[in-house]
Length: 160
Image (tube, rainbow, N blue to C red; front, side):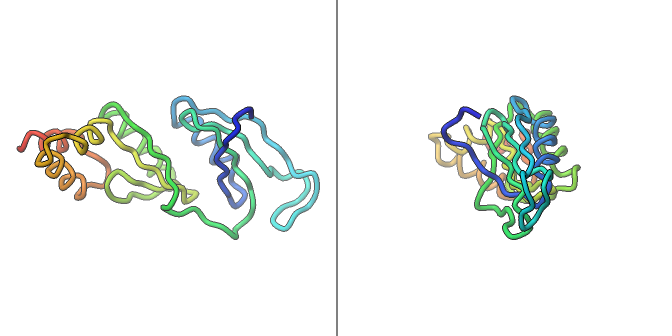
């Protein structure tokens, strides 16, 4: 990788599986170099996949198979901006349907515990509306959602 700043994500042996899933699920994503351990280490053996270079939606990442010691949590998430309900549904359903879990307000978690915010651009724009009453209605509607429903966001924006 040539990027000076790369996100390193810790996995318990599943970095390559996760990278392959992200590459097939998100546009502008790919798996790059796979580095195998040159010797045994506490949570793996010589020849095991140790590091996977990959890109998620244009962001360079490294997956490190470091073992079970550290787990992903909600303090880090990828926020993916979507253009319409079909894209929102496709990404949400891909993550949740592959052993992930639903959360609230557009958040979900993949099967490896990494958090994702599947956020329609219309939601971001509506919450930033200069009319604070509009922003509040949209925010309140979002607070009752798991996956974001763009039609419901638009209805809240229009006061319906």
